[in-house]
Amino acid sequence: MAVEFNAGKLLQVLVRNEAKVAELYTNLAAQMEVGKGANLFQLLAEDEKRHEKIYTELLNRLPAAGVAEVSEEDLAYLESLMENDMFADVDVAMEKIKGKYTKDEALEIAEKVERDGIMYIYELQTLFPDLAPAEMKKILNEERRHLQAVLSRGMVDLVKYLRY
Image: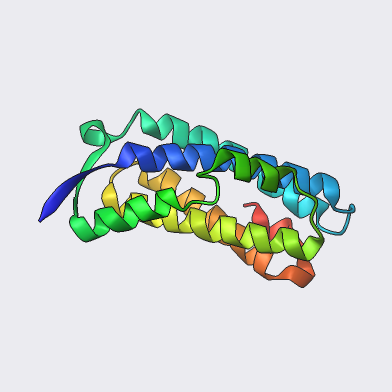
């Protein structure tokens, strides 16, 4: 049986997350030595700030007031994703953002953040395939490159390929 899902909530999560992730990456860049990850986290922060602006604009472009028909199973899944999101609890998120991290710890956090971002984009594209497909594809590709950079832990200073 199909039920209604307010996909605007999903976009609001993306807006919030991109802002918090940019803040997190800015903090991580400040903690890392130049040439030891600082450049990577600074570039990632810049991209996340830009993504936040794009998602904010997309909120106003959602068709049908942002409501999509989904199965009850999909609704439970989407609600679970949003409820258990790393940034769902603002107080805990702020502790994480302000925390001190080694390079390896920072990369582990970044890996989770980037994987979550990719997952949210896929869900949004499934719900609204016609919603800014070119912009969504570009953000998805950037998030994939972010994840690739984070996963290649030994090469965090080779950030050239993050940009077109």
